[in-house]
Image (cartoon, rainbow over all chains, first blue to last red; front, side, top):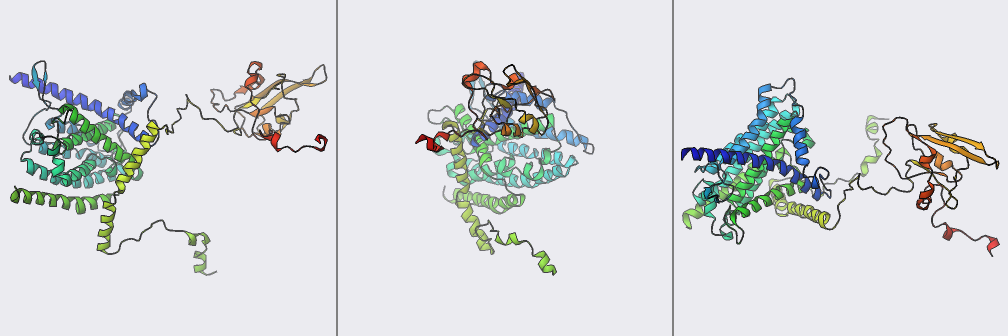
Length: 332
Length: 207
């Protein structure tokens, strides 16, 4: 019994690592294609059918490129920083249920690495450890732009941790559990039981803070190439740079899974669509939305970002929590 | 001249218009009003709508702007100065060049060479005609000076080469006999315009 659990967990971990590393590469392709279409271009076309093998070509190029470490950089920190980003992004996935349970050769597979009952807390906690990647990378690079990128990492990610935590508090009060499977099962009564209908403000706040925490475009101050060249990643090249971005895209998937699990009904069956397909559709729609905004919306300045976070979003989140509390105390 | 006059010499600057349309808010109430107005206006969603429409048009209405260059080529304007061509007479296929040597004389980078002789009919015959493409700066003087429109600029603009001195010989430039039906009359500078027949006035002899 014990050995079977260990073997199952190891296999699941390998599958998650393999699938999401591959998906990170594939998302770069999708991103390039969608951005190209929105700018009336074709995007990658020449390597493979419709440029599909471009991912492989880019991967080979990235992973065989010279691994450059600047002379005055603090070597161990500089070398470890990308590993922190990538590994925390994958560790955070260990508490996320990706699909509903399914039978494989008569054996019930639960597509979650470990159903700990503080799942969402664990995910948020580990994902916020991920900020050490860009921060340490930026500060150890011996480069002014990297230093600025690292400083911006601190202001952006720290600010939006607060908003994402507070905005999730209200739906968690309704559900009464921190386990993502419990949150999912709370919404199993169909389309109308989705938490987005009872917590629309929390949904909007969490999506905004999700943008900030995954450094997607309206908030990608860390590597805003128009202002600070490439921010924390200026001195990185080759495999280490690639690991930063695998981590970033893995984070993107984690956030999209969190949004769909907490607010959009998770992997419950939706009308005639089976649950496993439903959550994949939801995640794909959210990822398309993330790319869509990248093509449409302008960057904001750091002061605007902090202003938005501390003066608008955090008070709104607190008000939302208070109102939810009063509603639960007096109306139910 | 006083120092104020010296500083105030920029006559162009008084006419600039500031782009900022509305006034900056001064009091906190005005700031709040502006924030609410901008937040509830839904400008971000208008932006999303525009990009989505552009994507839809590009994908389904054929408004994609990409030219897949090595496979597809954009047509080049008739006056573009690309690699030269020597035109042939459409009727006989004879070389249109009369061997006057004007192009060789006018060439400012000295890259045109021609070799002529007087043939048995005591007409000038062009034996060899070369252009050193490594030196040619594509100024277009040779085509401009040619009295017979024999040397023109073609539309072949992909002239990357492995050799610094890349020679083009007469047979490279001259329209081959079997391609004569494909030869188009040059429309660029110095040629007769395509609607010349309508523009021309009848001479008294026509009446």
